[in-house]
Length: 283
Image 1 (cartoon, rainbow, N blue to C red):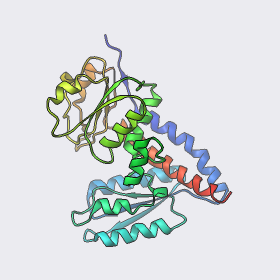
Image 2 (cartoon, rainbow, N blue to C red):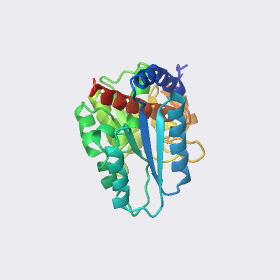
Image 3 (cartoon, rainbow, N blue to C red):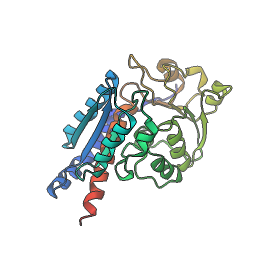
Image 4 (cartoon, rainbow, N blue to C red):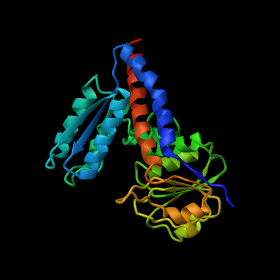
């Protein structure tokens, strides 16, 4: 029988947070409290829940969480002004603009206004470019979480064929770049990809990042594939059909409790990293 590993994101997240506790204490002893500013535009209930979860995670580690909630009618110009005010605030070390924003806002223009030093969620094109070239400081948090889970469980990437299903600018594309930089051979798939099941069947590692519930089926996988499900859909359902994929995979992330907790922990880590860089400027 094929040995199976459940890739427990809660274990990985707790390991990251334990490593941050002493770093936060040290920063505070030198007069700096790490601070993450979250900007929420509108009244999307899921976004509000995500922002609250991030705030609670900050509080548990002693990281300041500053929440800015702007009305549904906010313009691109008003949002950019808010972001620039946070860029100029010396007490803020990380800025997170919660996705999605209302349709009248140019989300990409808003993302681009975030200072590279405070782009702890890896959403700017400048930050993405550095990540792709292998020297990015703050990669997008979900791709970073996927790599961290693989590192924690000693999953080899060198020479392996990774198939990424999805090409969003903050998930599919950056995780493809990170895997390529780790010497994997990467195939990035999307809505125009033909014969998708046949491509997935070739993968040693499958990254599900398509945003469709139970989209990837177990009979698409080759026996022993490693599956990392970055999807989160209503009803606590991932982008892979868990039961059928569990039968074929040698290792798989659950939903919930897989990539999600690690994503939040990487956001906290990047915020603490940014605060330490700020402190280093004064030492």
